[in-house]
Image 1 (cartoon, rainbow, N blue to C red):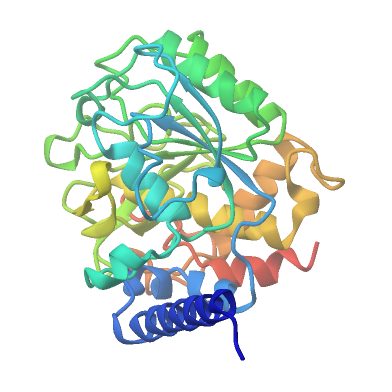
Image 2: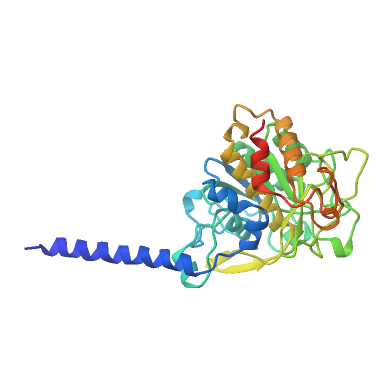
Length: 358
């Protein structure tokens, strides 16, 4: 005769099995979010090969992250520092950092699926270091200051980030950043260590100041513009302006990526769509993380990393394998560049194949 304890155990196992089956069915029938973005960038092809950002650490210097969102596993977040309010626990008082983190490491939750939302981060098994360096209500206006942003970059370096996403975008005319600023010094230090730095081109196209925003204007930072579902440049995405030092692969912006109506996580368990070159920069960050998962020898502490030379190698590969869209689509030159579209739309699988040759 089956004991009462055994009966309870069987019932629990049946319930758990039914829940898992329900989740599996839901994930099939609830359409995946941001499919167009994953397809256009070839991220889906690297996912199909089993790459998910494992072993890669990404630093996010932004408004913070609400890691209690149901789409996150708290173990994904390995380090936190609040350079604005000195709070010891994770939070986000402006949603921007949480939205970008969701693009990268959302897991796909019961709550999301039952709400009709099926999202999975580009690099859902990567680790995230969070530096809150942007005050509330200021990320849209290039908030933060030289000291807090530089400290955020240094924190990411100290916590072994392989890629740093600097999602703020500041006009060089409006803020006191130059080649002698602390932020510029820390960006150069990261790149000198073989750490990738990715930043949005900016969102000032309709009030164009004549160039991409800081810090993406810096030579070895990867500057990213935004495109829509139609592969057209977003109405807000900043244009570049080429200087004498702007030779391949450093012309600005370097790349474009999906940046309109991207569905992701927001604070307090919410979801929402945001548009901006920061979202596009998160996609490029995710692609680089997938490539480092595939080729870990190129991580900043890997056997093939040659510091700034490795950054240049990846930039060259990403530039020449980018899909030529917009004004570039009739060009046969792999290094054709446009002040809006950069070298083109990032292509994860093509870059993966090209890296295999080195």
